[in-house]
Image (cartoon, rainbow, N blue to C red):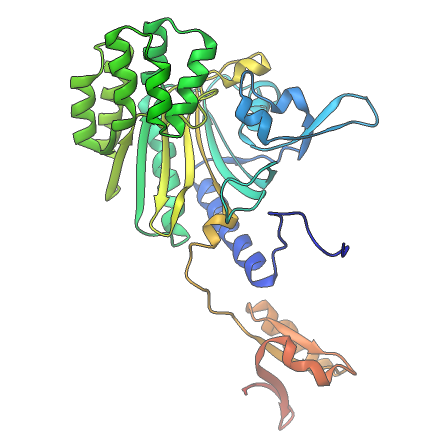
Length: 383
């Protein structure tokens, strides 16, 4: 096998993509900075127990693991940066009030999330710690929508959900962990046939509620109205539906829906969850939710909510960018030429020097202007 081939679903980023992805990253990070979010940069590699969330089989299957040659312990390559940021908040910053943190970095998955997805994502996101109210849920969701609009992603549809609905039904029906896991998997895949078999032995009320969940998807007000009528009047469900209604009413987004069977991240999310979609992609382009219990893994639970996006996925949704071509300059020891090149670069222009012996391939320099000497003055001339 050729040694230049890459593993499946692992790709290089060539110049155009790499530059534009980095520009998107800079734009989003600057937006987060202006909203008071502080940048952190956790390591790519940690001890496995720090990265694998308790009872999260999904996270465990997504994570690459290896043995540390120094300690003999199992290491893991991060599949999600959120747990790392929770660790930083819990033990390194150790703040008692609200902490706003953001990040951008690579994550690795053992399997791709979709046929056209890479296993090496460039994850960017924001996390808000120390506040349990709807105000922080709204701040995070609005910030995610602002970030998508800033980089040019239009026609965004937002789905809201709430894991408390499923948790309340599980608790009310007194289900064991095996049946809970089976129901979770069936709901995530919208597998109604399997779901029907799993709930066959439950009481009529619980059976009807679990079978109703996959149908509670669609336009916000319609779904919430049906949910109030069809789901048991449990306090946790009543509160969750009210919170969803409040947030939906306050969000400035043209298309918003409810999906009460969306349990993505169920093992560490504890409240409202959300996902943004775009007409050009059937996969979610941004995800987030509340995860108040995640800090328990690090000995300090904190109210928390956040969102994350994959920059490489977002890049593919954007219109083709017009390349900004360079200015070609000759190679010379002329002091005036060096000064003019420095001046042009200070103004933001790209100036490439045509090194001796490379004239035959100068077309590869991607330029549309030349820097030439005319009447003793170095001038930029269009080709």
